[in-house]
Length: 286
Image 1: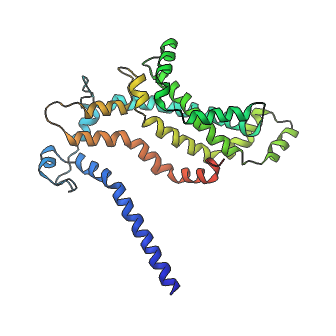
Image 2: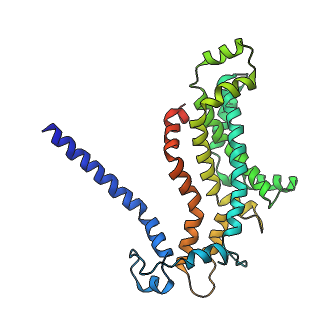
Image 3: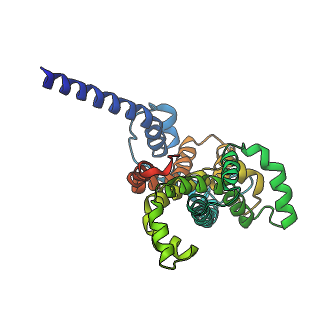
């Protein structure tokens, strides 16, 4: 009897999980099938019906020639702008966060706890609070409306999160390893390089995925601190959807939205299991 009850319970759980997954993925399905239809089929057909004929012209237009305001170059240049912003911002914020976390976890100094508390406070500062001060700072540095300026903004704002992740991960590493290395004459960077970094793969994956997702999907910093020629793909997508030349092309809008979201979806598909492993290895434990 107990075995039957266990099977029924397991079946119910899987049924609920599959049902919730289908509900969660329904918008993505609608976006995908809409992007593969021509505009006449969209207007006359069913929202969730499969396309009668696969039509990739909307994807081509979204990438190459859709209008994003006064420019009709598609999303391609803005996609590469986002790549130019994301890669250095993720690398710099992750490396700096690793060093900060190592210091705060294993090299205690006067005021270190207060500094860590200030960093935690920085995690909860709303974006809107720093918009004006950061804009003035970028203008003073001559980095307004530049890719370098956007990279700097994302690095500064991301350091609080990356430091938190690495600090909480490194706290769990036994102090005996550090003491033994010191007795052998290893210094600050030698211990970090030879002991901590080889053990940091899970938290590096967590941090890179977190930072990549946050920076790629950012709209507020992109629309405030970018200019013509430096706008990220999220700003271009907003301009594309809100620009109408002739009739509204829902298939182009849907294709553009999927193109903008595709890198983060691929990152989670490829490295999602490592993200979960990193979290369970202590990435968010205090």
